[in-house]
Image 1 (cartoon, rainbow, N blue to C red):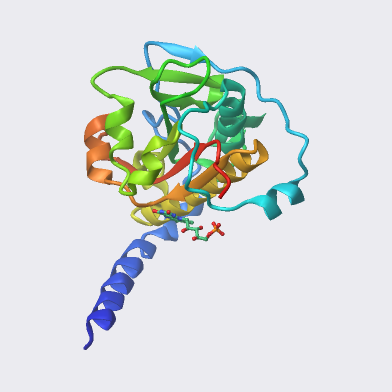
Image 2 (image 1 turned 180 degrees about the vertical axis):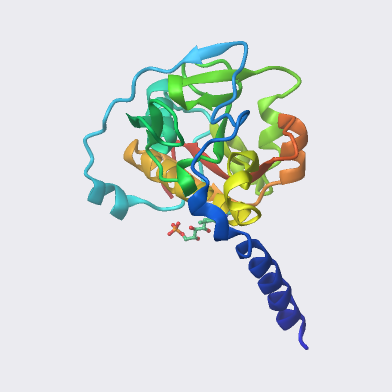
Length: 250
Ligand SMILES: Cc1cc2nc3c(=O)[nH]c(=O)nc-3n(C[C@H](O)[C@H](O)[C@H](O)COP(=O)(O)O)c2cc1C
């Protein structure tokens, strides 16, 4: 058996093992005690309300491109960050009775089971009106939770494997919190979270495009180091990142 064949056999084995736990899902409609859809931080920074751009959806789709060369000096504005985060995960409607809750939040991105397993960490190097730092998007309040020292933005930017990306003013890291859905989907939730992260990442990439910013979705970063620097628990897995800034036209 070739190396590639043995790799695919191993992947299929893992995939079947993940899928095998999906069968109970329809019966699980109550959010267990202790499952929270958001984390809280002592200090917070309110974001300005999102403001729509003038571009059509079609404009955004045809102008989207992965761009990796950034103007290191030109900051992203707080309004742009607000629009991007709202487009990624802001609350668009609340509906009673979902998971037996009142006012259950439905958000800009779809997610498996509506459980929103993806948390958004903002590494701000140069954002106008925002102290350089590391933040967590508290989607329900449209604000940033401040993640204190020793979690420094440059330590996280250094986790990017492509050095040319490290001078971008803004890095967003998407972290799957498996505790949100393991109770419902079993191990299959790991697979669903990877899809959830892709969906959020694309909304961010398109929202950045709508803001005339350059951006690229980046899988190539040191995830174990991110776990250490962000102080994540064993349920929390960094999946994908998005690097954003003003582009430099070639
Ligand atoms: C899941 C995923 C991971 C990616 N990881 C990287 C990456 O680590 N580094 C990078 O430069 N581009 C990365 N990209 C961007 C792709 O290279 C890019 O989408 C591809 O070259 C096609 O170019 P386009 O996006 O401009 O159409 C990634 C894209 C996706 C969807």
